[in-house]
Image 1: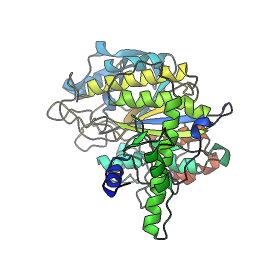
Image 2 (image 1 turned 180 degrees about the horizontal axis):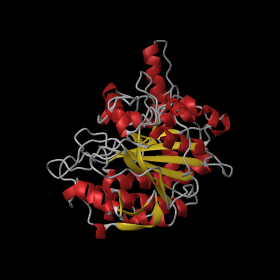
Image 3 (image 1 turned 45 degrees about the vertical axis):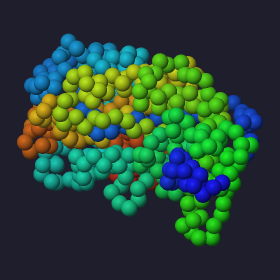
Image 4 (image 1 turned 60 degrees about the vertical axis):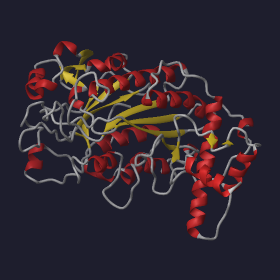
Length: 450
């Protein structure tokens, strides 16, 4: 290999710092797998920028008047809301018209909402926050910090997330390759204290420059595989080599899985989120057939920082992005059911933080705290809203903003949500506080949606 070719190869390879550090597998294509009856996957779709949960799910009873009075021109017309069956969290409810496919899943009890969720150190009310009588999380309203905190960062030098820490504490029989996976360069959620993070490109990682990982006898592929096994005495060089080797190994595993995959049954749109979830939907049944037991996938997507232009048909509006989200999630769930993994996959949708009920200038909304999330899949006890819905009154009992902008103090901790999904994955109750230390301050460590 010429030096210039190697340098060109190195800049195009899908290398991710912290990727798997194990060696390469041999003869992947000839492997046979026993039937796997114990497979569980968590897919976290993280809506970047701070999705406005106030317009995701809306009361249709008397509380709608409070909502419309506070939202002004951002309010969704009552007759545009897609009704959810029955009542929950003390209200009759409807969802944003762009989320109509998700209303159908809710009514089929395959989807639930989690009301007013967000990071908490301990239970807290708006009055206590205004009085500074209880501990609050740091860096409220900051995008990067809140993304990390929602995903499990504990405000210190340990950069790991709650899914990554949990996976490390699972029993040995639930450990496998590709258990902590990101589909882009965000990775806090799936980062462990010691274990690696794998990278899965939505378009595959088969080609590393001129090397085709599906052709192990090809000259360029053999060169890449030899380089991936180099060893060095220098600590820096050795770590780089381990990281490089792990990335090659992960890419080879993923390439092998995607070559075995069948097209998913769902009708995915040809957009960024649709492509990512289509790839994931095709791969999950193969991962199950390969004998994998537990996997967590982080899919970070969207531009929901809608300070201006939140409503309307432009691609950047919340209205348009929610339509893409609903379409992709619906197709993803349909594909999982058709492929026989509908009861094995839970999808959690969360975001940086919520947004103010009161509009900002320019037809948008500003950063807030508590937010409405959703969880989807066969394991979900759907058709319900879990948690306490906030009072949608500017300056009301849940509004911590001194100017009455409509910023809600969360009534459900993001740690309670994370603890619930990771205990479903197999985290022992005795290990919960090792992953979520702040839950020592809460009477309830596990919610009822799984």
